[in-house]
Each structure stands twice: as structure tokens, then as C-alpha cells.
Image 1 (cartoon, rainbow, N blue to C red):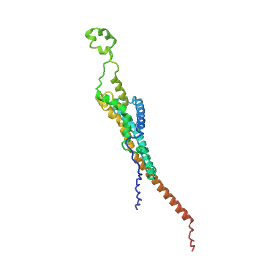
Image 2: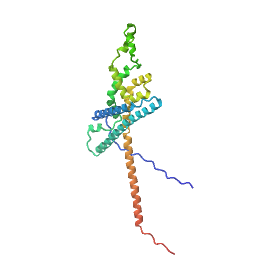
Image 3: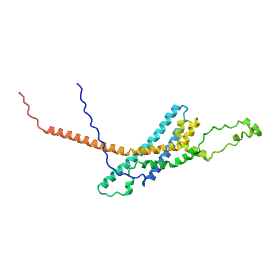
Length: 272
């Protein structure tokens, strides 16, 4: 005999109305500075970790550095999600206040949720790094390996003009210039991507440098996408609260019925 399974009632999402803010408000600059500080910490930690992940094995290098990149994106995603949830909750409270006839200032209303708000704050926070990366991307050239230093026995021959003139680059090496410092700064910011392609592939390294502005904008995009989930998170919270309230009512009804059944006197039993 097959037992009929009780169909589970689908959960109805509970959404509450909220005030919609503007793309920028009084907190935009503060949030941008916070995102800038978050990037500084992420870059600092990635330099420490990625300095140990430049493996010779391509598979191991891609797996480890790909995981580091995913973790970076996950951190800023959850940061944006938290802010988006906070903005939606503020919009719900201000909407309820307005419905009750309480005056809501325009400045407070602007701080509520807007889909573009986190993208703009993230872009502003990333702007200093992106500007450096744009300069490098425009001027980037393929880096060629330089010859090593001359052995000591070559010093005597280097005094002859026909030998010393072609070897002048060995005798007078170039110092570190401004572009070299710029390249180092940008590579520190995109070190996981540098390790991903490997230092031995000059062509791939050149493309990473040219794409560095877009790579540096990825955390801001992840931050904005996370903030967009604020409405979904608040809907889930309200739905869970409503479901828990229904369960509590059902438990109370069952308990009340049991108490009523216990108080009802039983009918006399017939012995014969």
C-alpha cells in the first residue's frame, strides 16, 4: 500500500515596501573611503600569500591563485550585501514613518537603497588604483630579460674600445625609473592575476598589464552586485519571521486543543 505524502505548502515571500534613495548621498564618500581601506588590506594580505604561490606547476598555480581571487571577490561581495541590507532596512523604517504621518527629511530619504549606489562608491574607492593602472596600460610594453653581469675576467678586455663599447650596458646599468615604480605598484595590486599567468610568459604578462584597470574594477563590481542582494535578504528575513509566527500559532493551537481535550470528562464505560 502506497502512502500518500502530504504536499508541502509553498512559502509565500513577504516583501515590505521601502523608500528608494538616490545614487549618491552624504555617506557615499565615507563608504568609498571604507572600500579603499578594504582594498588596501586585501592587497596587503594577497602580497603576503601570493609571494608563496608562484608555483612552477601551471595547474597548481591556477588553482591556488584562482581560489585567492575568488576569496577576494567573496569578501567584498558580502561587505556589499551587508550594506545593501542595511539600506533596505532603513528604507522600510522611513516608509513606515512616512505612512504614520511622521516627517522624513530628504537627506535621510537619499540614504536609502538604490541599485547604483554601491557601484559608485566602489568605483570611487578604486579610482586611485585604476588611474595608476590606466597609465601603465597605455604605456605597457613587453618586458625583455636583461643580460647578467660580466664575469671578472672580462674587465681587462672591456678596456678595449671595440669590445667595451658594445658592453656599455653591462658597465652602466640603468636605474629604477618612474615607470618601473608604477609597474611595481600596479603589479602589487594585481599580484594574484600575475601569478595566475606566470612570470615566464611575457605576452600574457603584457595583456595582464593592459587589462589591469578592468581587473582592479572587479572588486567594485562584486561589491555592487552584493549590495543588490539587499532586497532579497530583507525578503528572506520577513518571510522567515512570518513562517515562524505561523508555526508558533499552530503550536499554540495544538497545545490549546490538548488542554481542552484533557478537561473534557470521559463518558462512563459499559462493563456488560
